[in-house]
Image 1 (cartoon, rainbow, N blue to C red):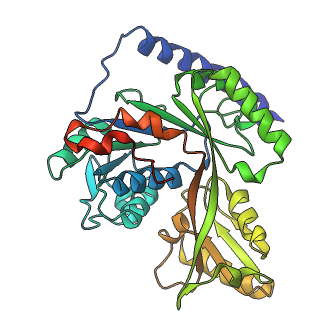
Image 2 (cartoon, helix red, strand yellow):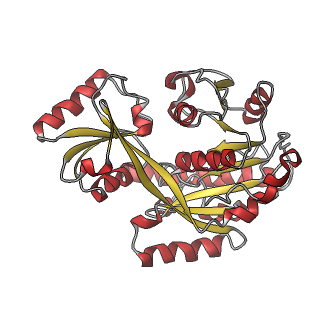
Image 3 (cartoon, one colour):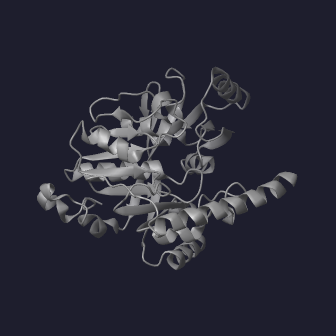
Length: 351
């Protein structure tokens, strides 16, 4: 109780800082930098895993399929590297997960042909990419609060299971900004829309419509696509009837565990904090829990896998985003650079 009593005034102070920062931008008291290419920002208003990284992958692949050359810009949260750096030039991965950060490294591995750059200064990161390779679009990973860089489209991702972080600002709750900040969004994507009852999803839709009446509302689901084991790819059906230790250090461990259960597995959770840097003791703990629980395997996420030793005998569940309805198609038409000609008809036409 004492902790919560102390956090409440801190949340009030945080709200005051947000209010002042909002006035700085709305009144034009600071300079907003631009990059010479269209910028699509993907972000959220809460801490934790709303599904931004899979959506960034989805958008990058969709652009590639239409002949564009996207690049991803990320801060590289908890990275050990300093300054601005190129994680991938689209041909080679140039940094490891420690130097790049786990999410940029994962994006670099999963998106061949897509340059990925990291750094606090996203404009400088973008200029670094432009100095090396041809780029048609930038995707700004976790960019909703990074207002120093202009963007053409702001996409905000809300997790249907807890879209508004319990209703309280940090550090009392999980909100990075109040829900009213959604008025800045061009698109609101409700992720994991299949993991809540229809009536709950409708309540989320109604609240988003009130908060962001001008925004395009889309719904996404995270579909399991592949199950990787040390001996190679396994069918997803291999999880059915298995008892597995679900090892995760992500912002939304419950979503990962729910996916495993939906695939027919009996789940024994083993959770660490988001972006946890795994040690040998952590691996030993997972193996010991597998033995004690008489489980068949340890299953982890792609983001966790890049932070684990490469030789651990764990399974990895890979998921991908599916967007319902293709409502982004018209919005993206205006973002196509002229040099790409007929491709300006919209890069999401394949949906």
